[in-house]
Length: 120
Length: 287
Image (cartoon, rainbow over the protein chains, first blue to last red):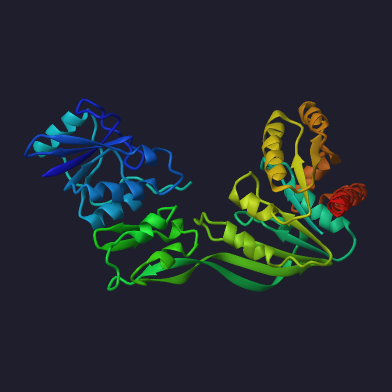
């Protein structure tokens, strides 16, 4: 199973970034092999608008089953849902801690976006 | 002649200048309220509307039976208003600027367009003033298409006054572009000066002659005057900080009704604006 985590840096010790669309990095972690890949999202950090949608498209192309992040807005949530990526919000700590919590089964997928959309 | 009344800072008196100027010209004049997010000129003029036009923007509709999910549309769109996920294209209409690019690049011809309402243009009169304004629907963010619809009521003859939105972003550019003269309204405070500077930079980029109206003279400091002197910007009119003007505004009445001497001041503003426009015309003929 592949997990995507929004991160402030490129290692498993990096803090989970609470933002989805404008997180600097996505860590893609493979639970079978324990290997991971850091994918740069810097083009979206300063996007004028639609950052969540673009990020959701980029993440879904990496093929994760689930996304761990802090918050997710309605446009990103809709895009990820169509792509079949489950979204878990409210995740904190380091990337490694988030992975452990997910494996322990203490994190539950969100049914709806947890923050309002915003423009401009 | 098209006169745009604008300002960097909100609340400096754009509407006050626009409506009182229109009321002081003393002949047939057209006033277009382009501040479509919160139009309020009609309150001061008691405008009566007799025509309503719905205004929409074109947004894409994807035929899912034809879409292969190739992603050409999504790579084309600068605003992430259409995105390709797996074998589907998702549309986010409120982000769409209506350029039609996705429809053109779709190799399957799977995209058509529909109109999405964003607001209305209302047309009417207020005595000798022909009055038009736009009202953007609550929750909409895309005001430029509605501002353009309001501006389609400009006619080449006579005088048209545009009350523009505040700021220096797309809605302001849309409103100001194509006018003959810009009147920048400011107040003599550090806030007023800061935002006036931004507005001046914007109008200079557009290459339109402009001058400044200083409102609420008597408050603040000398910064605006020092700036205008150093940049060689003409001050077209000074309006004193007068409680009677504020009281009239709060009742939705014209300042020239509360303080009749202001009528001459606004008439002199009109003369100054005509001189600015004329100077430009002479200069372009010389070129």
